[in-house]
Length: 145
Image (cartoon, rainbow, N blue to C red):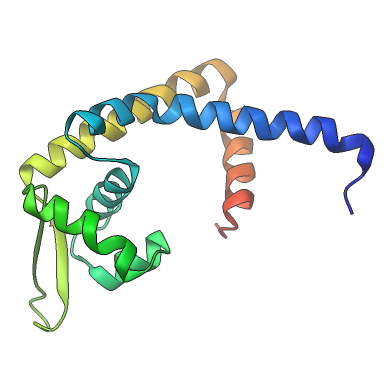
């Protein structure tokens, strides 16, 4: 049970989390909107870029979405020639994903705005704040690390 005297402070944290996420995604959202894309497309580009040769199943696991939820946005990115899909060399039954040169440029632009944003914030708040922030968001995401 949550201590009722802490609810206002926790609500402030919820609000700050919401407003910070809105600020964090604002620039990428504008860039994506110009191409008719959304945040799910950015997540796909980001994780394919960070995990070259990732299989579709591997991407499903990272994103924790269903095949149906991934299918349309992934097909859009493939159709726009931002992501390529090809059989794995070790086993043609597995399809591996890669960013194309255009996909790499778009991903770098999108994520670059977020890197700059966080670098500026951490520059103001210090390394200790960065480490503590990572602990907090890791716990929220329930990720070991």
